[in-house]
Amino acid sequence: MYARDLARCYPTVSSDDDVLDAVRLVAREQLPALLVLDPDQYPYAIVSATRLVTALVPDRVQDDLLLASVIDNRFDDDARASMVGRSVIEWLPRRTITAAVVGPDASPMQIAALMTRKDTSVVAVVERSGGKAALIGAITAASLLEHFAGGS
Image (cartoon, rainbow, N blue to C red; front, top):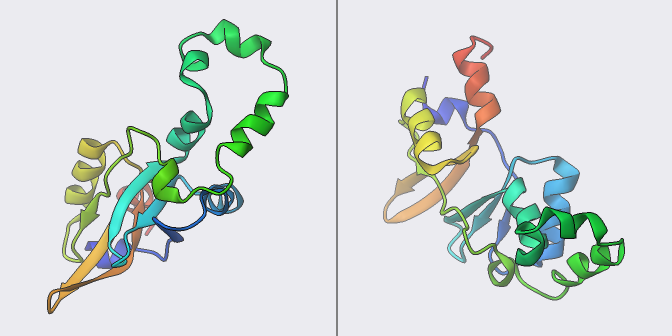
């Protein structure tokens, strides 16, 4: 079995797309991560849902959990406002994970090793042909675990 066999269609967004729409996509589809493509449709970044949540929490609140316990619901509006009118590239968290990419002939163990090294739950599968790259799909950690457990 190879990456091409494990890859599935995975929703993507462009780096220029509206970040609020991108976050809604992650929430609606319950995606483990946001797969961001550059203008050439090549994987640019994979940002875990947890990192997206982190981007909504001010640094001072991340550093002081007691402060988080006293903030009221007005923060919800501030979090939403931080996304309004911004593109994905403008809003991406500072510690964004660059895209984990494999070719169609990568083995499951190669994919697992890349997930481990990059600490990501999604790997993009890209086929290169004639100087162009085409996204075949993505492999999630859940689908890789299913493969190793004998479910696919």
